[in-house]
Amino acid sequence: MITFYPGPSKVYDEVGQYLQEAVDSGVISANHRSAAFMQMLEDAIRNLKTKLNVPDAYEVYFVSSATECWEIIAESLISDGSLHIYNGAFGEKWMEYTQKLTGSARPYSFETNNEPLLKDEIQPARNEIICVTHNETSNGTALTAEFLNTIHDQSDNIIAVDATSSMAGVELPWLSADVWYGSVQKCFGLPSGMGVMIVSPKAVERAIAIGNRAHYNSLLFIRDNFLKFQTPYTPNTLGIYLMGKVMQQVASIETVAQKTLERAQDWYSFLPKHGYQLLVENEAVRSKTVVALRDTKERIASIKKAALQEGIVLGNGYGKDKETSFRIANFPAITDMEIQTLKDFLVFFSSK
Ligand SMILES: *Cc1c(COP(=O)(O)O)cnc(C)c1O
Image (tube, rainbow, N blue to C red):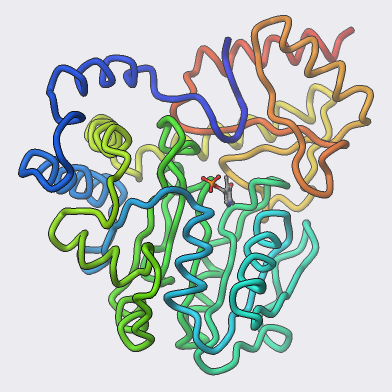
């Protein structure tokens, strides 16, 4: 079975071998305050920062999921409201979730094919946290680095970015934002069950100023532990082990991102050529890591069914286009041969 589901998604082929190594090494049986665990956590963070080019001054924490980051940000970083700029289901969920916790989330939604306007409509208030979704997994759109750089240059507000389905697949303009988070089951090519949170010194300063330590997952409490290469609660030790191994194995993000880009360009020219309709018409806002297609409900059902008979899993639609779209993950762990298998199937299906 090969899967193009955009999360959980295909894990790197080497993960099977790493699982066995994890058991053999004994570290996954070790106490999470032991020297062996702390060394492993330190290695995993170092490998991640090196391969993804994370600035030295930014701190990396492993948490339970991207969804948990919504809660951590709301409780530890938002004191004077948040402005949520989004065009799809994940950005909207983040806003709704934050609204329940803080009562001061302000939505600004834009159309799938548009880039959000910068000047007049988006005016963050003082101390408001700006929340954006780098890669909107539900509809296959992405924000450009220029957009992130511009909001960064135009305000000194803290910017938080949901990069769940792009982190480790494309290059991220780290210095243009203060909080970046993602989940391991997307571009990291790892089994689900862990989130990655990356924070700037400015975000840490804000958390200190707010001083919230009321939650088991308060950012300051997580940070106190991670500074000692420990975790506030018993962590996903196996997940951290696999993260360290996979981050050691992969090429640097420039190389990975180049391949992601080439494969994305290839999908975006291949699919329309064979009669498939892209969900996103504006090339400038198309995601590099999640390709969304539009079709009738009936035809989508028959494509998915026929694909499954060939051992291929396609991604369902999500959010408002759930019934009339399907998605193809373009994540780094997918091999060229698997892509070729899907292409052959799609050519065959379109000729029926
Ligand atoms: C998958 C996804 C999430 C949720 O990730 P979890 O690991 O399930 O918490 C959030 N935002 C985006 C953009 C996603 O793609």
